[in-house]
Length: 364
View 1 (tube, rainbow, N blue to C red):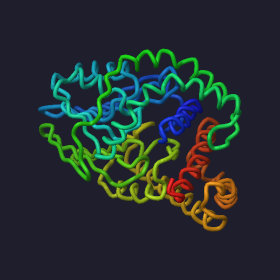
View 2: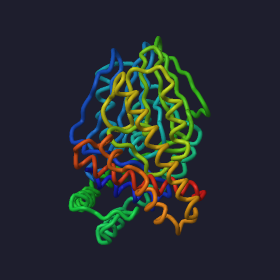
View 3: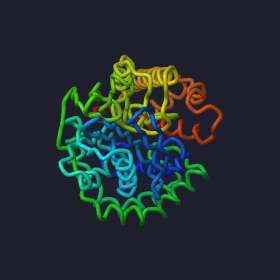
């Protein structure tokens, strides 16, 4: 599994005081899926430092174009823009950032340079976090290799999980891939959102309605979903990641309720923040599996925190109680099946989810 992305996640927590996600499974090839006439989703290959890149969706109207998430590497954003220009001569007028994490926003400046007058759309909290966190990312980036090496030397991650040989290999690959990524970032002109909303924003691209909604806290405080009511399509950002969810921070106690509101929307096609496009009953079943999992774990973390105490020093006891009282093997199989790679991904996200839920109880 992509444990190097896990390393990136840990580093993001340590370095930027906020979590980000780990792609559950390597993505080695860039793929484009045409979902309907004028609607495309791009899944990007991982960066040289093994950082996953969020899915990008392109929505073309009769008058203008909207893009969902600009991915991580400017070079990948340029590839996407080249495709967009082959698909249409209409301008990209809107770029939506579903949340502030780097694998969904680092291409913002590339789009702004290519399309003058571009509006970068985000929830007000995402705009605040992007403006706060992103500038420091460039200053901190050179230290990431040092921190990854510290994790390798310690032999365990930030949640106390002992590194496997596969983990060690991924960390080593990530360290080796830092240099080309740093060269790309050295040339970035960072762009934060400049068009914000608090609950909902409706756009008309020309005979194509787009609804941008905030349904509540989950992966971050400002997660936006993009809904095409006529086409019955939804882009979830990292509220939904397949096949193993991202539960490395955020707001676990609110996450389930936010997903319940998402599940009430009338969609047949779901494009997650990372992973494959899901349709009809598979999409619904996966969202409901996420809800059940999140609510089961957060409830058990709460129960154990009440039993042993909620202080940070009690996290090991809480973790022990949760692992004892949750059927981890059953949940692992539901998400990961028989894949060792995805099972490892699940174990990592499960451990991190306990940490995040406990931190939320303690008011961080």
